[in-house]
Length: 243
Image (cartoon, rainbow, N blue to C red; front, side, top):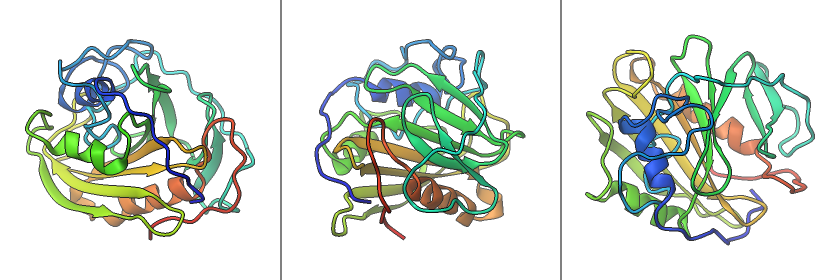
């Protein structure tokens, strides 16, 4: 994905944010307070340790989400697939998201706000946030450690390092019984991808959906979002990434 290594290291920020969303703190779009509430969740060493997108404390229903109309923005990856819009987010990045999904955000103690896109019935969501640790693997090491609380029923399915040529990233898949602030759809399946983008910073894309309908829909959501992701203040060309 035309990425260059160079993540920011901060120990003590997004974990609180991620944990709040997955485990329970807050009531806002991401399991935290409202759209602008700072994460105050678990007092753990902060960092992106808990998958913000998947393992992060899930953002609950947005209390003051400001939805912006999808706008055709220039970005990598060519034409977006049917059913998606290329979306220029107010946080500065460009991404492909499913047509008709709503947006909410929650303040983060590290980097940009945590942004969440949700399907209208709230049975599936995509989360985007900036990673505090110096590498994807370091971020997951923190999340998977005993020091980081997990969502109820957490069960790791797989963990892969996806480094390949110019692409640097890792992917975690897991199951959870529930996500705070989200509907009861049975077991949740989460795909959390942390990677280095074209600006040299580390970001996470996390997809959440029902385990009962298989796992390809969450994986496809992540693949499409990654293919068309361009970080803030960056000119992106065609991207490459994991399959």
